[in-house]
Amino acid sequence: MNSKVRYLGILVMLLGAVSLTMGIVFVQQGFAKQNWIQSSMKQEQITLGIASGDVEKGEVIDTAIEAQVAGDTVREHRHGIAPTYGDLLGGEKFNPTESRQLSYAQALNLENYLYLAVATFGLINVVLASGAFMIVNSLALGATGFSLYSIAKTA
Image 1 (cartoon, rainbow, N blue to C red):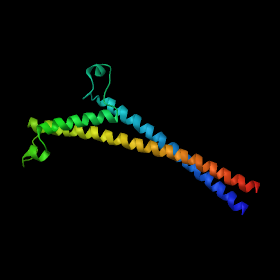
Image 2: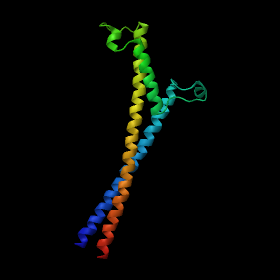
Image 3: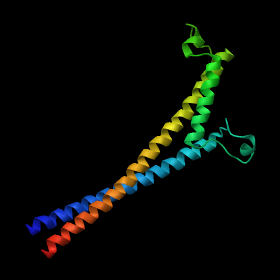
Image 4: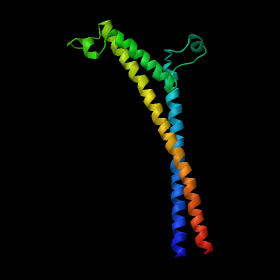
């Protein structure tokens, strides 16, 4: 009986070690992707909705909240051109030489870029939270495994 409990303690500690490793990888990847997306957004230098004084200081859209606000602003402006893409075309094909259609397409592209950034930041938060949970879980598993091992050893 004691050997079974001891082996169970070892197994639980190993699961804790695996969980710790996975948690560290998740957290590291989350921060790496967050830095990458922020760096990429800074390279684009989109400043829509940022105060002119802040733009002069080098502030650009590089957070989920800023991207959401800018995306909503672009959507509002795009709907000022036409409520939908179908309404814009009126049953015809896209004509890139028509400035109204080109402006709409460019606004749609920028809006998609900004909303993709919002989704990416959300996914990064999920990855970081999952990694943190794995680390906390690994500590609980390690402590439980050590306790089982100690109990079996002393019994």
